[in-house]
Length: 603
Image 1 (cartoon, helix red, strand yellow):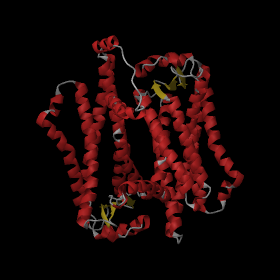
Image 2 (cartoon, one colour; image 1 turned 180 degrees about the vertical axis):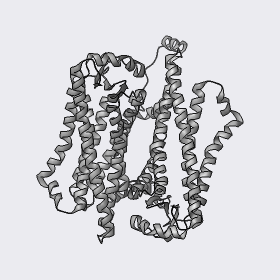
Image 3 (cartoon, one colour; image 1 turned 120 degrees about the horizontal axis):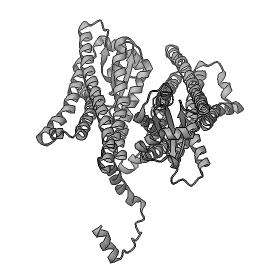
Image 4 (cartoon, helix red, strand yellow; image 1 turned 120 degrees about the vertical axis):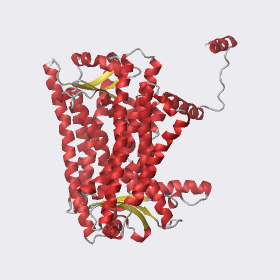
């Protein structure tokens, strides 16, 4: 399962990054300057990382006070030493990725600061900036190779856990990692030194990103308040949004999981099976990495649209889809938040567009409820107490009504509780015009102004906030409760004498559910919760509210992937559909002797 997931994600990553690389080369605005070359470097590194991911197929394991990163070399054509170097190169790419993000922020800060420091990125000096991430990657690789080398005591310590979790024998693996409380004192200090080097690289790059990010944000605000050219404002804002999202991805998918994976064993926190989440995040990160630039920067988005619209027009001669889509944007300002629909070019009346906007919001409740019902079903299936009968016959209608009811309740809360009055519209209109260039008369809008002088609107907003809170928290509680119960049941199944097929199927379904829960939690629950609740406690997230636009946009793309990739029957059926396109139509199957055919049929 893990191998198929990693390979699929890596192939998607290569396709996305090759597409982005083409757009950077041919569609970059002239004002981008030397930043273009940094973006080419960033994208090329992602392609290399994805290619290496296909070759290495890394696994991770945390057990007790140890962590291991390893690759299965059963079918490897290289000697052990070469495989070890390749594994360390894959680890080194983490250090390169972190410092590429840091250098992006330095460049954007100096570009928007306008003190002439961009001269340091011109001519032969640009080579210096390319050597920094390469040097940090080399340092990460050397720290892994020399400081996190696995000795015999570490192998003995993790051998049982390795066999139970992955079914691998240590003699067929190439491993790096740490056993923090090893009886071998020399190995203990070596592991500690290696972990400290990794911690230094992670924290220093994070500090640069945070410092420059804050400075860039303040400069962006000043540019909007001053009389800079509209194109300059727009380009700087686009690049900053891209950087914010591009930083959120490595923080959530690299810094956070790797930080926990490396350092929790040091303080004797056994994360056990949960360490496998790092496998998933590391696999999907390169595929998600190019999306912010493709979506946010106008030149690339238009170039992408032009390419596909030409293809569609050539075949169908129809109006481009973009003119008919539901175009929504979110904005948080001060103690308010709004969701806006651009009505320019709309075929429908204002009231009908409002219904479309509220319906789109209602689907958030539907999606979250579906995820919760998935977990309930799996928990009852693995519990085996006969409760699955409640999903049979006419009772199934009840389960279908739950997400529909949640969506309707969410939609009604938005329509009646988050209806924008004139006071709120006057409060947010200047910021909508400044951020999106939209006139208040050309939009459909819902949202909240929590501390409005209109007390009726204040209580209406508060009531809607309460309803959305109940829906969010109740569904999240169901997911967490059932998830923990399923995990315990899976562990019991593995310890008891259940059949191998049952164990395998339940494990596949659980992994699919974990990933399917991971996507809505990080792409729906967390962004929506922050967007709705932070303005209530007077935290102005400002431009960061745009992150929710992108997470909601990419969520439907990734929602079906876990089931398609993890569950064997679906994956094999999908392969059977795709497989004929890879076989030659004129290929003739060899004749099978009658005796052999009869024997096969009996078998």
